[in-house]
Length: 239
Image 1 (tube, one colour):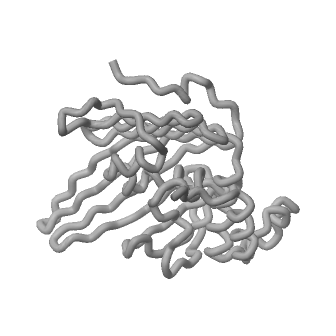
Image 2 (image 1 turned 90 degrees about the vertical axis):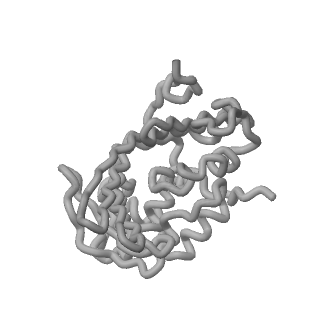
Image 3 (image 1 turned 180 degrees about the horizontal axis):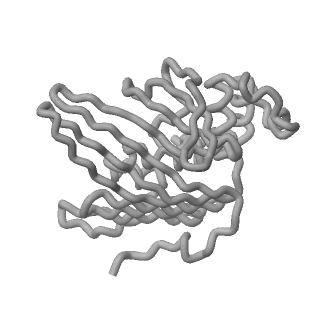
C-alpha cells in the first residue's frame, strides 16, 4: 500500500497545528512566541515544500564505556534533491559506503554486500532502498530525507517528538538558532533550527546502554531552492 501523503493533506495538517506560512512571511512577528510545536511545523513545511535541497554533514558519535573511555567516530554524508523525484543520498560509515538514488521510477542502492549479492541493486521504491539499509534508515543522518519526502519512509519524522519543549536559543558558529528538545524513540534529542531559513543545522541525541552511552552530534550545511549541478544527482559507483 503506498505510504505517500498528498501535499494538500500535509499542508492541512500543518495549518491545524497552528502554523501558517503566510503569517511567517509577513515580517514574522513575535518569534519569541513560537512554541516548540509551531517551530517544528514551520521547519517541516520548509522541507516538504522546497523545490530543491542539498546538504553536506557529519555524524559524530562519541561512545563512552563503563570505564569512562571515550571513542569518537566521524561519518560524513550528503543529500541532493530536486522535486519531484530526483534524489541522491550518500553516507560513509567506517569502511561501509551507502548510496541511495532515484530518478523517476528508477531506484538504485549501493551498499556493503555480506551475502555475495551485487553491491549495486535495483529496488522498487525509495522506501525499500532505505529498509534494505537498516543502519542508514535508523540513523539520525536520514532525518532530512524523511522531511523532504513525507510519507515515503517508515522512519518516524523528527516532528513526532514526545515531551517537546522550546529551550534557550543558541549560536552555532555565526548562525543564530532556535532549539527544541524532546524524546525521539525514547531517547533525548535537541534540534537546532536556523532562525533565518528554518532548516536543521544540528541534531544532538543520546542512546544509553546498560554499561555505556553513545552521544551523537549530527551537523548540517544546508542550502534550499538553489541550482544543483547535475553531477551531484547522478548515481556513480566507486572505482
